[in-house]
Length: 88
Image (cartoon, rainbow, N blue to C red; front, top):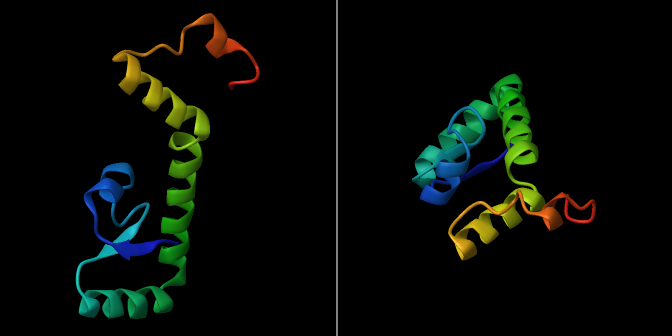
């Protein structure tokens, strides 16, 4: 379960309230800690959804594809060397 200060990079990658929980003030943090301590099943569901997202969309392979796309300006994952076992 991730309860983190709200940031744009985080909320672009994970859906708030479903895969991650965020706060903007200390008061909001305290309220959310109290809420999730009393509702562990909700916190666990958020944790599982966030884990699923991280495993599915944030692997080293996915990161490498994004870096290469940024460098080359296009998706190059269809190249012969990409299909080699050592990179996947």
